[in-house]
Structures are given as structure tokens and as C-alpha cells.
Amino acid sequence: MHQFTVERLSFRTLNELPNSWQNKDYLELLKKMNYESPDDISEAELPDMCLMAITDLEPRAAAEIVLGYLFPEQLTAGQIENLAHQMLTEKLWEENPELPLHKGFYEATQLLHTAYNGTFPRTQAVQFEVKCTAENPADLALLTQAPAAPLMRLLAQGLPDGALINRLFSAQLAGVEFTEAQHLFWQLTPGETQANAVVFEVVSSAYWLEDFKYADQYQATTHADAAAEVAP
Image (cartoon, rainbow, N blue to C red; front, side):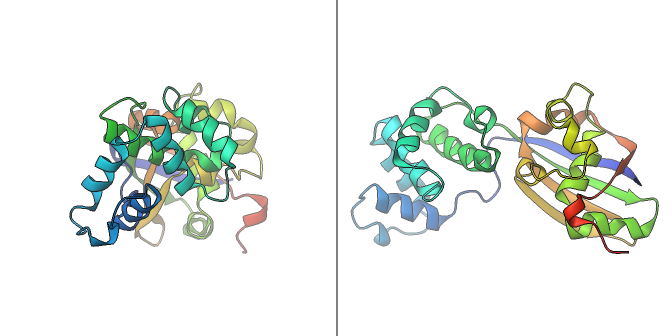
């Protein structure tokens, strides 16, 4: 086990993921909705025109188009049809069992909720900065080479024992394979790095990490997955 001091530097809640929808996405959605001459729309107007075009459709039809755009390979037409219906009432980024799809489900619902000014569930995510300081500077390599699993093990120790991550992933937190960790982080950005410390900006679902707002500074231990062991 490797000893770290973990310090939460900031915390805020979000309704939209940073940089989740770009002009190229709005343009492609307009094309999928058969909007007339979308290439002629100025970049400044693309977001609003896309939202207007979405609201010209029935919510379920719009959801099918958005899901089809986000998951062209991962979902079949039948799955898209079923999920578009579920999206109207369910938080798929929390309730669907397919973790790798959660970020996309969030982004889809975020866009549709905005377009229809409701109708679809309200989205909520969290964004925070966390500083991890290694007791032994050599251990910092755990967080610079393959950070998802060892970082999530550190964060979990700042959450209540009854938090979802601690309850649902107890075996992975204690074990040597935590492949799910990469899907629990929706955006993971390393920032300032010192000889024995690194700061990460984390974006994730409030479903998983909202309770980290109560963390302050604490001691924690971590380890890498077996497949990502750091060479001595």
C-alpha cells in the first residue's frame, strides 16, 4: 500500500459537462434532422438553431436522433428506440447497467433537457480539484501513469462508508482490477504537478461523487491495478 495525503481544493455542481457539445456536433445533428442548408448557418448561431430544430420534433423522436448520433456503433436501432422512451422519465446515466455509456447518456439528456426546457430529467454532475501528495515521492508514478483506479481508491476513502462507490465496488477497491474506475470519471485532467504531488480536476456524476464535497483533507492508501503496476 502507498500512503497519500488527499486534499479537496474546490467543489461545485454542474448541469452541463464542460465542452460536451461543440459546433461540429450541432452541425451533424442538424444534418441528421434533415435541416435545410445547415452548412450555411454561422458558428455563433449553430447551438440555438440546433435546439430549435430539436424542439420541432416529438421528444422521443429527438432522443432517438441524439442517441443515434452519440452511439452509432454501440447501440442497435431497437435499443435506441427503447432507450429514447426510457429517457423521458429515467436517469439513464445512473440507472442503466452499462457504465461505459453513462457519460453519453448524460450528455444526451443534458441537451434534450435544455432544448425542451424540461420534459427530460434534470442532469447534475460534479466538478472538483483534488491534490494528492505522496508520502514517498516515487509513489506519485501511480497517479501519473494510469491514474483512474488508484485515484478512485483514494477518493473513496474520503466518502462515507455507505456511499455507492464503497458499497458497489468494495471488491474492486480492495482488489487489483478496477476497470470500472475509468468510466466513473467523465473527465479527468491532471494539473499542477510537483515532485511529490499532483492536482487533478475531476468531472463525474453527482450520483457517484457528490459526497466528496464533505471531504477536506485526509490520509489514504492506494495501489495500482495488477495490469498497470508501475515498474520500480
